Length: 344
Image 1 (cartoon, rainbow, N blue to C red):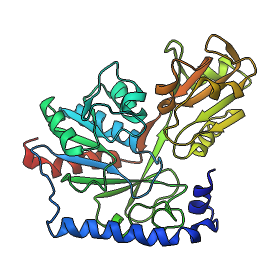
Image 2: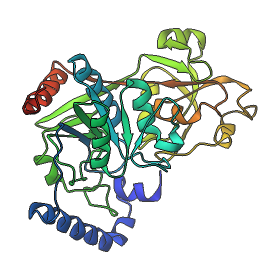
Image 3: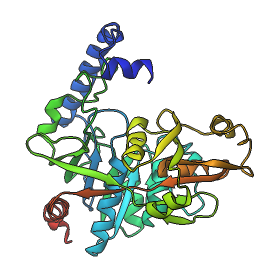
Image 4: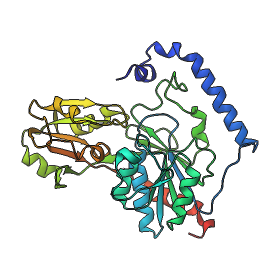
């Protein structure tokens, strides 16, 4: 765990040294919100409904699986959905950038490429989300899901969903950089739904769980369900790596699925992998032509960046969002009801 994360989640005394910067961040963000409330800074309203899937803190907490869930559910209701993303970790030499089948994670970021390949819908990467939404409208989209962007107030939105890591919650509850929050806890009272990824939910929060039932081999796309995979490797011992906001969440998920982790290596979110990152898993894993005896499992988000360099016997575990009872259907109904004035 990085030192800054120890300050956020383990009460490391570094947070006190960062407190003056914390106060500066608070003042700047408060002034910015006030300028929007006074209409000095203008919100842009477009002729398409916008659903924000965001958070009030930094780091991964399950936004991308939530976006995928919404896209798939809304498509089943006959809505043409597009996705806008900031594209963290990508070069974005062209902005806005409409992803194609050939767009790489190095160009557009790992999460947009994952969404594009999984959902087969228009995905645009842009630091200017208004410009990105306009490009999606040109593609015929009649609803836009924003992957992150809760604090991008320039873009008027119709529905705000906040995803919370149920294990880490809000850390020490402080604003950046002394804490992990981009906005205070008060912001949760202004959004439409707070969705908790794992763990326990507070009052008025909904539980979302991420479930994976299959693994896919990077080399050739071969898919196995978990039972078949365990029969293939009866020792149930695997190596694991994750370059996400909270790698321990992935490692714990593998443990709960019945795997023993021989080695586990966490990287920072949006890590740009090199072939050297794989050598630590096996003395023989010097290139992608070498087959490792112990399989290596990674997240789908990491897999979109590793296909060309991962050794043989590397697999990834796709996950999907699941809700208790009919809470998922209620969420979709909320979105459609809120957006009826657009003629959906």
